Amino acid sequence: MGKLSQALSRPKVPIILFVVAAVLIAVSAVGTTRAALTYFSDPYVARLNVSSIGVSLIENDSNVVAWRNYDGNDQWSEGSSELLTDLLPQGQQVQLGRAYPESLAVQNTGTIGEYVRVSIQRYWEDAQGTKVRTVSPELIKLNFLTRNGWIVDPAASTTERTVLYYNSPLAPGDITPPLCDSIAIDPAVASKVTQTTDETVGEDGKTYTTITTSYDYDGMRFCLEATVDAVQDHSAAQAIQSAWGTSVTVTDGMLSLEGGE
Image (cartoon, rainbow, N blue to C red):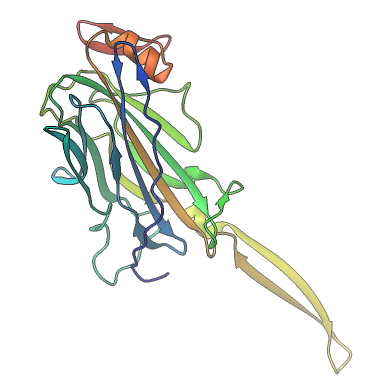
């Protein structure tokens, strides 16, 4: 296992959509951890350009890891800090199978009501930063919470990506409950091995067999990516359909997915 380290990479740039009766912003985040499980993370980055809507990401109840808010006169306040910096005490290593506290929530930091959507991506990269598609993202375990207002959209989700909606509008200043509360790496990582056999003939004429075992995940890193979007709560069903292409029903302010939860 490696030592705790930190690194930065170029942030993902979200696409900003402009549609009639819909306002969309996006907040993106990337956090990665190296296998054999040396931890580091990238900063959250927020980008938007409308003056009435704002979003912040809250980590572990109190840590605002990214924000962008309108201050008036075409001025914005924005900033970001690193994700998961308190995951491990100094000098400790990630233990396979251990659930580490990690919660993410969304706060409305704008001046109008809004609905929010979060997309979480899990994947693996090799030492060169190339995505490895042969390694299961499901070995990166996030404990999603779906009994507190968060809804998983199965039609938009894959083994790599989980898309969630919060089913109630957020008034300015409101914070959602956490959408997840822990992260762990499946112990199955340690069982993914490849064995090679090599036979050699010794000076005594006997044949010797050498079996070499290597870990399939050696040198890889696991990656987490989170994107938060918000649309105005006015004409929300139409706004969400226009901005996100998702059919929802909004009844007495409560959002539900058509044909789903």
